[in-house]
Structures are given as C-alpha cells and as structure tokens.
Image 1 (tube, helix red, strand yellow):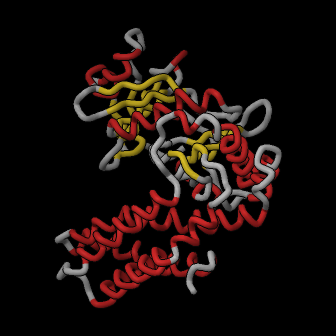
Image 2: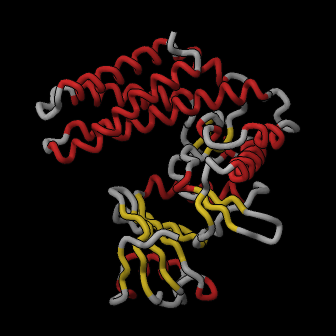
Length: 325
C-alpha cells in the first residue's frame, strides 16, 4: 500500500470527509486518523482509519457532482446485477456545495500489473464477464456516450486547444514542432474516422470502465482465488469496449465472451484493442492540452515532456491500426 501524502490526527470529527460520512451514517464512529491518499485538482481521496463497518478502513472520495453521480450509477445500478467482484459500496452524498462524496471499502491488495501474465488473464476474464452481462443493463442506466463520437469530440477539442497553444512565447522551436506533429496526427485520424467506426461496427455497446490501468485496479486474495477490484469509474460510460482491451489478455477475454458474443472473434478483439489505444491517446492528449496556455516555463516542462511521448506513440498507434496510410 503506498504511503499517504498526509496523515491527519486532530480535529477529525470536523473534517469534511467525516461530516459527509456521518450524514449518511449518523452512528459511525470517528476515525482514528485520516490519510490523504490522493489529492488532485478535481478530486481527493481519503482513508478514514477505523471509521468503516466493524472498524475497517473506509475510502472517501470527494469529487465533482457529475463525476460522483456517474460512479454512483455504476455502483448502484449495474455492478450489483453483474456476476463480477467489485468494491463494497457504502453510499453517496451530494453536499450541495459543488462537491460529492463516495464511500467505499478500502481495496487494499496488490496493484494491477499488465506486465504480469496472470494479472492480464484475470483482468481479461473479469472484463469479458462485465461487458457481456452489462450489455443489456447499461443502455437503461443513463450513462454518457463512450463510443467513437465521444473520442472524435476529444480529438477536436484537443486539436483546438493545442492550436491556441502554438502562440505561447515560452515554447521553443522543437516544442512547437511536437505540437504541430500532434495536430497533423489528429487531422489525419479525423480524415479516416470512418475506418475507426468500421472497426467498432458489430460489437455490442456496454458499460466500459474507460481507464482500466494500473492505478485504478487492485487484485485481492480470496477463498476462490484473486478478486479483481476496479475503482475510479468516473470515465465510465456506454460504448464499444475498445478502450478497456488495451492492457489485458485477449485470449482470456475471448473465452469469457464467446458464448454471448460469438460474432466477436480474435481478429475483431485485436482490431478493437488497436482502436482502444488510439482512444486512450486522444483522451490523454486532450487532458494535457490546456497546460500549453501556462505562462510559466516551469509549469510547461511536464506537458512538454508528455506531449513528446504522445506524439511518438500516436504515430505508432496509427500505424498499428492501419490508419497511417
């Protein structure tokens, strides 16, 4: 388990995370301590030590209401009706002040590693069951679109923001070149977007996690073997399961889906995984693109480094998907 960024030991009852938890569980005990597990611009994750059922640690996630409501939908309306392992969900509170709170069990366990073949196999089976069994549930759950139109929107948003960033006087010639190369890659991809849609055609839409990677998945030992426990469903939605297939064993996934989805063969899965890598790349580029408006060279260093990687990887991924020519 990673070391918390901060540990609080005083005035715990007055902490917003504790007050939110006691809003839905008035008899809950005060935690022994509060660990700040993750602090980001739009969300913060706390571990309330000793505050959960039977004195267990409790994870409290503070996030924007829209993201919180999406995760609530997944935990309340879909996961309980699908035969997969999942985190114990203890509730949701919207405090009316621009913040929402989710209450979950502490996953603990081992972080998912796509480099470990056994992990990839477990994840492939887990996602195969989720995708096939949730396909009839997800369309009625008011989930946001996560199909090709969504990622085309992110492509266009990223390109527009990067184009604005070209005027930043703090950028050097090589960095301007990287931005122009990514913009050109986006132009090329958009011109061939119909081929992306063709690659996704015929595959059922279902609940997709949208960010199934190391930091968002735990494996925990259990009586019937390791349990796969994904978290952070804030990027979830309804779409073809391309983005979820990039870090798993496709053979294990195919074995899990073949009875319900016999039309989804090995070639289709490999094609979807290629498209999924492009989807995730577009999301990552869109996420960092606003940083190029910063007026501090120090703050620009990280996005510059990331964009150089994205430029190179996008070119490779377009080639792998047959979209570079």
